Image (tube, rainbow, N blue to C red):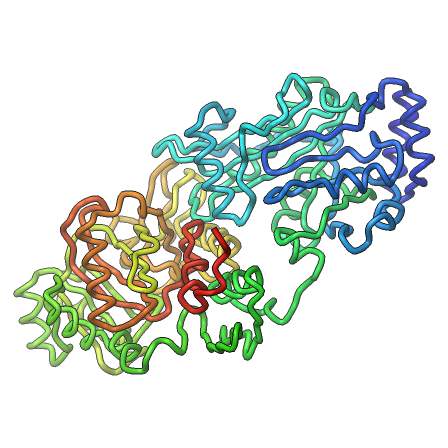
Length: 581
């Protein structure tokens, strides 16, 4: 009956969908297509319910309603969704994602080789932990490996992409063999949970994971690969279109729950918020806190609960006084307050005439130039060693504030510690933007490509500017924008590690030295600020030495997921909204 099943798929591709009963009849004719029991494959985060293996819409709807707390079930290949939704319209909804299919006869192998990482199966507890950290960083549900349907019973296989230099997991994908899962007469397969580390600088990870899955299932004699992609995820759709995927006219149904809320409620007033405000609003919604969006573009919103009303601009709230805010904004005042509290700070003075600036440089040999009141790394230049570079950096900084500071430069890693309610909640090493050579593209092209990846991964919040500071970093390494970077060569293209200029974060909360944590809390108390991001230069997150650089009254809490920054923020504002233990 293979020709009959293939003809059915061709009708799906043309948008012709038969009734639920006719679909059941067609698959039943094959004899091997339907198991004696409906098929539900557990993937660790929830179950895939194979729609045409269920004898009637009511049975499928009831199984969706049996979804376990904290999981997400998906009913796919539902030919007549209205019949299933009619069973429980208040609890079920039609998934707005598109289903795409790649027939393996249409597949063309890659013509470009991507290097620097390898693909292998998930094998150990450590692998699962790394995959789950990646999934949580992309706001995906983690996998409980103990719940997985075994592969010999038709369960899924998970693959990961591992950086060859660092050994870090930078991508993952799940595949399902339909022949072993539900005796698919068309010998199909599907792809789920494709995720790439948002901070990954290596190109092609997502494409290679998809191609690996395609070629893996091709080698098993299967015929096609299906996947589900959110209807507005244009970046992913562009990749799939390049690989030859076409739209499949079938449907998926899910249960209404907190995880799926954005899908069945659609965009609300919070849709225009940036990621730093959105993460807080979403946590407030989960707690039943009333949210009013005052100005989405500015990140302004008001939270109300139990007679308490607090206005917020991202993580800046009514709880932060104007004095505390000014102490953070004026970097010279920050320096004085932290120094008076007995904390380690760099030597600092206001930029003056050329002679004064030269004297400061000769004393410290390497200096930092920054605007007195600035944010997001704008106007900051580090490790300046000539008076010409210092003077040029001062002029660039004056575009953001006419008052400019000179500081002694200190070697080390840029560490951000988030303190909420005078407790350390998260810590991350911030690394400057970098590119990896492929022996084909010049430095400018590599920067532009990496900048596009960072923008896509951060909803437009991170990009690498092609400015004087980037050019200085490139030239200091012996290259220029037109240089072809050798394959595998790593090039840091910024000296500062700010996220908004293309930097990325490595979570180090678990290894943070107690001296650093204590210094951060003391700094927050000295500034009398309840929510703050404190920046230090350190030799390592697990070592006690530090020098404070600055304090940020808007800490960018979304950058530190999966650490519970949003949860602790809402706990601080509305302590009675905490879930019961």
